[in-house]
Length: 148
Image (spheres, rainbow, N blue to C red):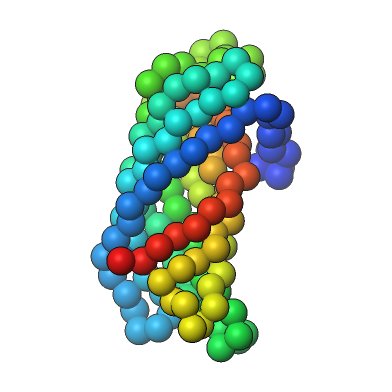
């Protein structure tokens, strides 16, 4: 049950820019996307860059979509830090710059403005149970997505 026992550090933040492209879509139901992110971590005891590449599966239809268009996504990939994270070193002295990346995302938009989405996401980095390395961090994120 370690996946349900995540810790979140106070006073540390992340700002991310991302580009995503839909690569495959099965009717109106599900799509597969590729996404690249570049982010800056800042706050108490941290100041470094992060680059992420991931593949995302997205579920599109929900019963209330005519009122609030909704999608839910799960993604996985790799995350690389420019420096070893002090937060991850506090948790595990064998922390690595390259770790696995997982995300769960919920998007909401008004049907009359389909290009603008309000996004909520869990930004999770970990060693995938020791397969990639050690250390982990979690961020709860929110933001805007613009389709162009």
